[in-house]
Image (cartoon, rainbow, N blue to C red; front, side, top):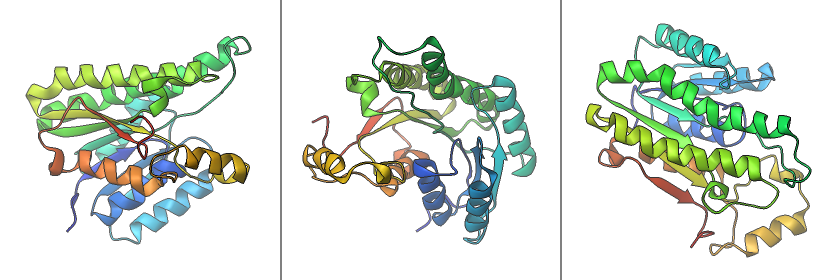
Length: 249
C-alpha cells in the first residue's frame, strides 16, 4: 500500500542523512519529491536520479532555506514544476556548530539559529498561501531530543530546536481551521554517515544508554514522517513525536 500516491512533497536538506532517508521512503510510497541541497551538487543529482527510477517525479534544487527570498523562489519553482500543488513540507535542513557557551562565537550562534530555525519560518511562510488555497496540507518540522531536554555544549542547537517546537504548536493553532496540520519530530541518536566517523567505543556507549540498546536509522525517522505526512495522522496536529529509542523516557 502506497500511503503518499501522487502527493507532492518538499524536503529541505535532503542530499544526505535523514533528509535522504525521508526522500527515499516517500518515493517508495508514491510521493513526488522536490528537495533542496546547499553545496555539493553531485550527491543531489544522484539522489534525484535514484528517486526518478522509483517511478515518481523528483527534482533537486540548490537553495538556502535561511534566506526568505530563496525560500519564496523555491516554492514558486516547485509549484511551476509540480503542477501547482504542494501537499507536504518537511523542514529538515540543519547544521551544528557545537561549543561551550563560554567559547561560542556570536557568529556560530547566529548561523545555527538562521539555518535551523529561521529557515522553518521562511519555508512555512512561503508555502502557507498555497496550503491555505488548497485547504489541506501537512507541515513536519525536524526538531531534536536536544530541543526537549537541552545539552551541554549545544546551546545554539538546543535553542533552535526548542524554538522549532514552539513554532510548530503555534502554526498548528493558526492553520488547523483550514485543515493544515503541523507536527514536529524529535530524533534521538540517529546513525548516519556522520556518526560513522566517530570512535566506535563512544558510539557504543551512546547505544548502551538507550533503552532499546541501539541507535536509530534514517528509516526510523522517515517512517515517523510518513505517518505525519499521510492520512494516518489526519486527526493529529501540534504534536512532538520523540523517535529516540526511549532516550527521554
